[in-house]
Length: 228
Ligand SMILES: [Zn+2]
Image (tube, rainbow, N blue to C red; front, side):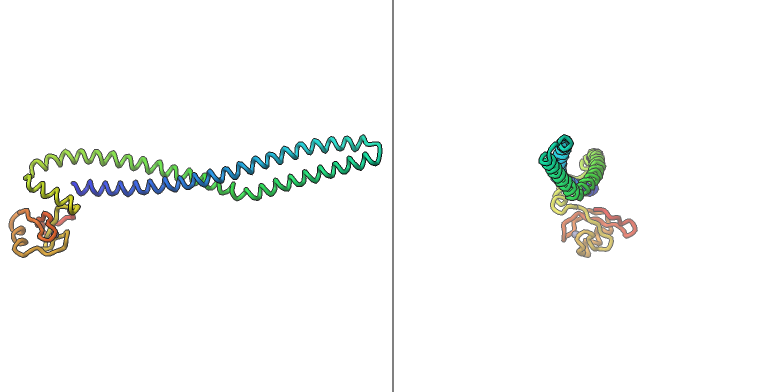
């Protein structure tokens, strides 16, 4: 009974470890996403600024065209044409900048999308695992109290000396009970003194292994079970 609860608790601790490592990878993803999103947002803002520039300059181009149409002298025509060319060049520059920005950030945008997908998956896994562990924890608590009730009843039937010895050994060795079916203690693998072995084999006695001190009893090979 105590061994079963111990195994369950160890298993739960293991699963909590899995839960924690999932939480850590989620945290790493979060950090990376935050940084990448900031990069993309900065690029978007700059792109937007360029876009506004292009719009303003397009309006200026319209203005220069009107000037060109209205020009009466060669000087006025030349000035308007220069203005037009200058503006066209500025627009081209901005458009090049935007293309460069798009190229620079496309990999990051892809990475953000992939990280978002992964984030969602890890989150789902985490939620499922947390629910699973919570259910197991509740079951363990229920088991423990159920077993605890049964345990309390058994303890009352045990001689105090024996129970104290059991608890002492359990605290020291993890398990307090050993079996033998061939004269070897199944916990420490040491041979029992022949006299002791013959005694516990003949009568249903409770003895202690002289090597590991565990409470030991005899089981025939056919009924030998793995009892911790
Ligand atoms: Zn032993």
